[in-house]
Length: 348
Ligand SMILES: [Zn+2]
Image 1 (tube, rainbow, N blue to C red):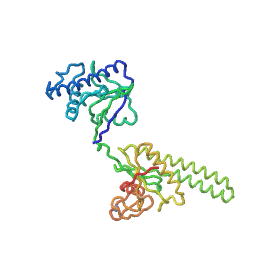
Image 2: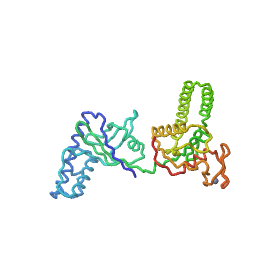
Image 3: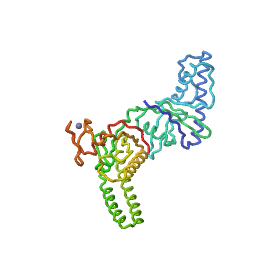
Image 4: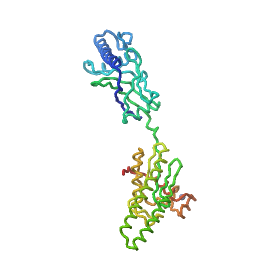
C-alpha cells in the first residue's frame, strides 16, 4: 500500500462559504470540548451520541468531533482545544469529483447544507487526486481549516502499489539496424537507419574527393552538413522509439553502456559520436516523457542466444542458435538479451 497526504487550497470560496466554515470551526471545537468536559465531570458516558450535542453541525461532522475527542481523552494530560482546530468529516461522508469543465471539487456537509467547492490541483498532487477521482484509490477523513486568508483541505490517498507493474524494454543501438527494441510483452520495433547510412556514404565520398583536391575549407563545411543531417536522423529515431515505448504500462528502457566503439557492428568506420548522440537523445527524450532508463553490461549481447545464452551465429540480419534451434532477427536477439539483463539507473 502507498499512502500519501494531499494538502491544498480551496479555489476562491465565496464569502458566505468562508463564514460558514469559520462557524463550523468554532462549533467543532465546542463539540469536542463539550465531550471532554462531560467525561471529566462524569455527566455522561463514553458512548455519548449526537443526540446530546446541541448545535447546527451536520451529524456526520458531530460524529467525527466525538471520535477525535475520545482519542484525545485517552491520552495523558488535560485536553483544551483552540479556535484554530480543523473541522473534519470521516471518509464516507465527503466526496471528490471532476466537473464537466475539468475542475476538481470537494463536497462535504457543514451547517446549512452539503457544498461542493473547487480545489487547486498543482502538479505535485495531480496524480493522487486523479487516482481518487477515477476510483483507483481510497481516501481518509477530510480536514478543513484556515491559515491566514486561505482555506485548506487535507486528506490521505491510499492505493495498491502493485497496480503499476513495469514493462522492460531492451534497446540495441547500431548493429545491422540503427535501433532495435524488444518489449517483455513480445512486441518489437526496428529503425533501419537507411537514411543515416546513405548520408554517411554520400558525405564520405564528397570529403574524400575534396581532400584529394586540397579543398580543406570546403571539406570542413561538408563535415558540418553531415553532422546536422546525422543529428536530424538521431532525433527522429529516438522520437520513434519513445513514441513506441509509451504504449506500454510504465515502460523502463534498458540500454547498453556504450563506452567504446562496439564490436561486430555493420557500421564499420563510423565514429562513435553517432551512437553516443543517439543514446543521449534517447535518454533525455525518455526522461522528458517520464520513462526511466537503465544501463546494462554490454558483454556479448549480440553473440548470445536470448533464449538459452549459448553462443550462436549471425548471418547478416539473422541470428541462429545451434543449441536450441532458435532463430531471430540478430538485432532483436541482442535487444532481448539487453532487456533480460540487470540494469543500473542511468542519467544523460
Ligand atoms: Zn539458444
